[in-house]
Image: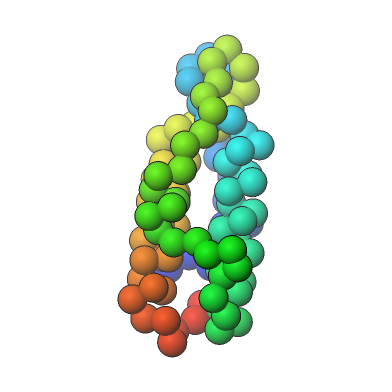
Length: 98
């Protein structure tokens, strides 16, 4: 199932405290950027700046330990779904998400 900008903006992750997690602000910044890109694609425009599934897959975040961060497994799973959505849109540039 393709994700929409609304899906990305609404996504919440479990906060970790006593095990490694991802820096929350870094994850949220990427999701905000991705949501804007999906909005642009839904409007029939190319994202500016460009964003594709490969970029999502190679993004790294600072890690946390003994302080709050986002659950790494949940973030990784969601980012893979986001990357797959962007890959699908790149294969069918005339399609849009509503």
